[in-house]
Image (cartoon, rainbow, N blue to C red):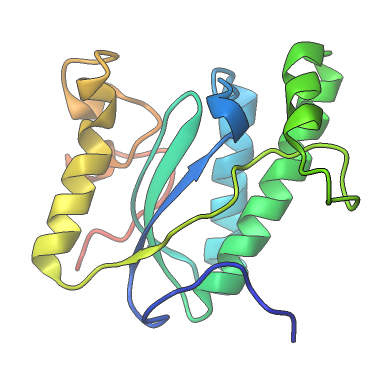
Length: 177
């Protein structure tokens, strides 16, 4: 069994996770790029038991509260798959400036890939109870409001705030906790 770079304090509990694109590059400005994330989450929900409690996707990073039996493996699969697919998308759209910066960001010691998409050093944080879960979901949902993108949390399409507001969201989330 391979060693995971992701350390989960209590694998059987939900964790707060952040993924940031290298150099904070604005990749999630196209629906197609965000859809790759959503498709991956749907696949992982169906096939690996991923349970999403909440999420937000902004132009260069995302936050998630998630849980599954082996979150370290599931999260590694998510990051690997989405990185490959989004790089393919960027190549198809001839986004040479972004691709060039991702090539430059690739660690010199890495020879297993041409580009580095996600920043390394993810630090998952275990959710220690309902109070903390509410705090993290509020933080996640307030991100677009704090940035001035929308006035109300439910206005941001790429967020689970809609699910918690009683509207149909773009991704299924577990709200009955």
